[in-house]
Length: 287
Image 1 (spheres, helix red, strand yellow):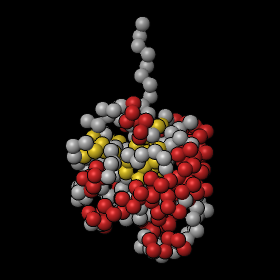
Image 2: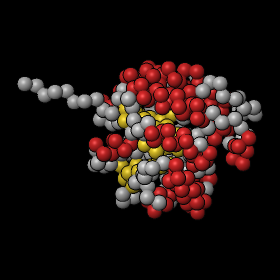
Image 3: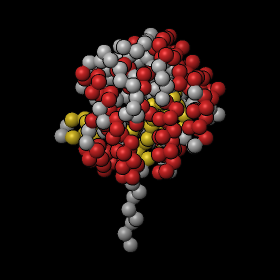
């Protein structure tokens, strides 16, 4: 009798919970100090994601920005009530590359304090804004461990991006330091090149068929894909900001009207889970 086929690889679905004006690409024209002046759309857009995940019975990890959690505590509670994992995305969405170690410590601690007031679960995960954990900011690893963080998902193992990337990083889950698990963003290897297939802007800019092909390649190689989106990426009605470069406008606004339909297809084509489920089922996932 032949063995039963192995179950398909379960990928990880993650959401960076931030509002449309929190994005680093817009920070040159929208200051952190002015965020409260802008129309918030994060609640309605996050609920759309929650409804979509509910229909597909997907548990996800929500990396929540502390600034958002502080202003919308009921949103954090709703995410948790619907059975999802809560993790930290920092407080102010400042990149690690733009902070001193002490500034990062204060920012992380503030974020964790806000999440402790709004969520009942312990916070075990962290994602740096704009994947800014790089070879130059590895000093942040000790700070994460000192604050009880058990896993990070900030490393993008590519070389071409001007703001992030750690090309020498392993594509599989691995350890940073002695015991901090790193779950890098999804990257496929194609003819010796590393090609992102992790969601976000790549999901909107690629044809859907390319995303699907790259993810299937990762899964065929035995690697789960760490996938991510932002709530604002489902919102073509968000305000348009003036004063942006052509490339910034393109990266931020292109194909917003197609994201939700593509995400629906993705959830039909691939199984997904949260980080906590992945680590519970595969406690030795990190090499």
